[in-house]
Length: 185
Image (cartoon, rainbow, N blue to C red):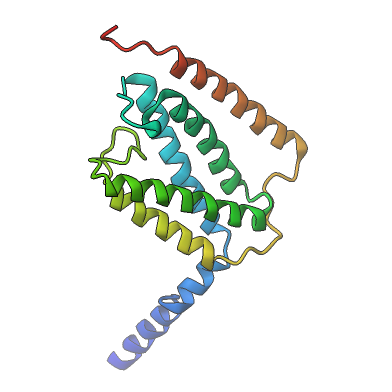
């Protein structure tokens, strides 16, 4: 009686993919670009809130208002592109290139002993932690095998609606960030 219970438990757990089987399923699924896209969108939202509500001293070109504005406008569009699944092969290589650039920025900030990278707005993320996140995301994208059949934006109306929504939100964020007057002035 006891051996049957053990056999059933072993059978049930042997169906759960762990190790190489789980990694194999992950790299063939559309979850990889969606996961990376959600991380990029989260970083963009947190980063957009910080310069729109606080005075940020421009210690380098990475902290100037115009650079932050360009970053805040680029990251949500890029994150939406990753989540959409549109043109998977191009998206994969573009994402790896963008993450390599972000890795370089985090590496530079690590070398100059910056207390935070600013990647997630007011949340203090050390530059080496941002570098690690970039490497993990790049590794996932390198291992990911695009299927070529996933395209969430097959309908033109849906694509036009998303583009229009992005343009409207980007315009409001741009005006809000550009017109921000620090409290000390």
